[in-house]
Amino acid sequence: MADGSFLERIGSLHSILRNEPTNMYHTTGFMRDQVDELCAQVRAANEVAAESEKVTWPPILGLFKAVVVTLAYLRRHRVQADIGEASGVSQSTISRHAAAGQHTPAVRPHRR
Image (cartoon, rainbow, N blue to C red; front, side):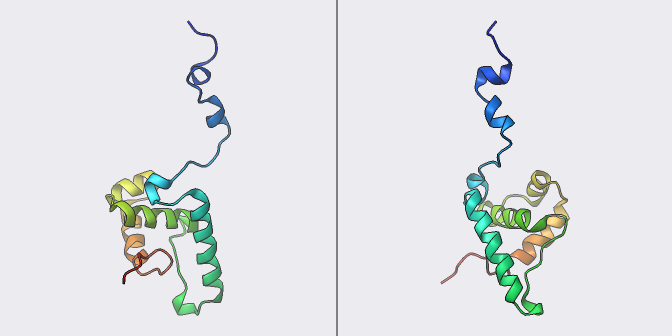
């Protein structure tokens, strides 16, 4: 039997213990720092927007998760129940957010 724990033997101990955010490119099409920048742009735009034009998101998701959920939905059109399960919220929350997210300029696909 090899020395060390199972995680040490497979080389994952340090990556798990660092508790770093996961790469979300395959889910959203964006790297973590790009999603952070997008969130900052949404927040900055909200600060100067008229009350009727402010972007909102479900409080249970928060801004970051709301952007990730919207990007994941737009990128792959994953089943809403699947996105909800991965995000720790209900399918109906994802459904309401996805419908509202289609009208959000910051995450709406550019159409010519």
